[in-house]
Length: 216
Image 1 (tube, rainbow, N blue to C red):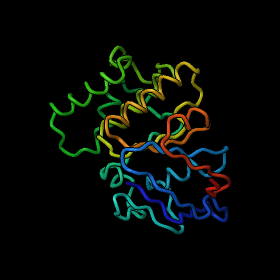
Image 2 (tube, rainbow, N blue to C red):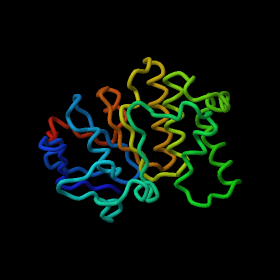
Image 3 (cartoon, rainbow, N blue to C red):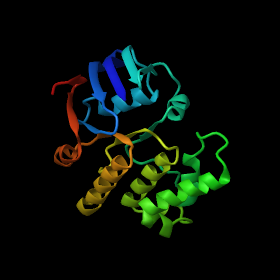
């Protein structure tokens, strides 16, 4: 589904990615693991169009998306759950989910409601708190909301940046179980995770990123 070829990204005179190449097969879970500063988040941002590639190609189903705008990439079926969740704190859970469907142009109201109900089935806790402000949710609940919001656009590739960050071990296990369920429902997953043991248990394939290079 996704092919990254010799991708290089610079921040000014600093090289963040030094020509990395990897593939994410359709219906798989692929994990990028590595220490802070290795270039993992930059990789996802480049795929999402949030930072420019200095060199290389990013192919989605053999279509070159390297220079596409972020909104176009979302409409092509790639959704990015960033590190830190970034829910809209002053909107309710329900309103956050509605916001996730904005890239879907002219979505009928009945279909919008159907997609919201699907997220409530996947995340029953969100249904219980549907009219609660997102900023008052626990960290685990906010992570569920961030994932549910991303799924509202029906992505074929879901990219997740450190979904376990700052969460209790029991909550982390629940989040990883949900990632597996999402994948079983047909969504391809590209996962960044510092918890290497959890990531390797979940992933079909993994790459090790060190200082802007894939070493394994």
